[in-house]
Image (tube, rainbow, N blue to C red; front, top):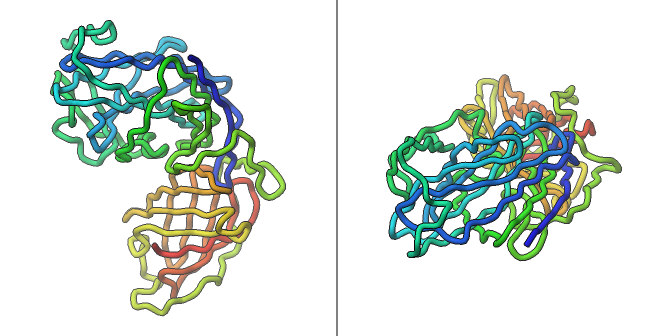
Length: 355
C-alpha cells in the first residue's frame, strides 16, 4: 500500500525554499530475528537541491536514546546495516533523516518492527565481519546499546555542527511512534539549514506532523503578516533595542558584567505581531550561548538551532533561518523584550519570560 503526503509549513523563523520536496520510499520490514544484523533500504528523491546526507536513526523499543548509522547511497537507492539485537529485545524503532546540499534537514515517521522467533529472513542474512560505525549525538557515547549485541561495532560521538537529529527532535527523545506497514512514501516540505521543518506520513492516514509537537498540521501553506514568511537565510539589520519588559527587582538582575551563563535555561517567548495562541516560542539556552528553539504558529510548529550572546547588558538572539533580535536588558532578569527582524524581514518585538 502506498501512502503519499506533501506539504509545507512556513514560520517566522523558517528559511526559504520551503516548497521544495524530498520524498522517501521505504518498504517496512515484516519482522526481525535476534542475533542477526538488519539491512534497511530506502529510495530518496528530491526536486530541488541534491541529497547530501542520509542517516538511519535507531534504538530498541525499550531504549532511551536514538543513535544512527550513515546510509550509503547510489543515486536514489540508499542502504544501511544495523547491529544484531539481543534475544530479549521486543522490537526496534528506526527513522530516516535526510539533509540536502542547501541545508534542509527532514525526517520520516518512526517505523517499529517487532522481533520474533522465526527463520532468518533475507534482510538479515548478513555477515558480521565488517565493523559497524554507530554514532551518537549525546556528548558522551555509551559503552553499549540497549537491546543490541556488541556485534563488532564502534560507537562514537559526532560534532555539534552535525547533530542533525537534535534539530528535528530525534536524538534523546526516547519516542517510539507506530510505523506504517507496507510501502510508505513520506513526502516532506523542509525548512532551512538544520531547522527541522518536517512533514511525515503516519501509519493510519496520510497526515502532517511537525517535529517536537504532537499536533498535526494541514498541508496548506501558512501565510503570516499578509505574505509568505520565507526567511532571508542570512543575518539582517537589527532594530533599535527595546526598553520594554518588566523588571522583577530580584537579586541577580542583569548588569554590564553579566554573561550568557546568567540566562542559561528555558525561556518562553511571545511576539508583538500575534497573540500567544497564534504564535509563541520556547527556547533553551546553554552555558556557551548555543540554543535550540521550538516555534509554534496556529497550533503547529518546528524546531531549530539558534545562538545567543550577552555582552555589556545587550542580549542578542539569532535563529538558523535568519531572524535577528537584540536589546539592552540591564536591570532585567526573568522578563524582558527585545526588538529586531523576523526571518521574513518583518520588524517586531519578542518578549521573553524565564521558565
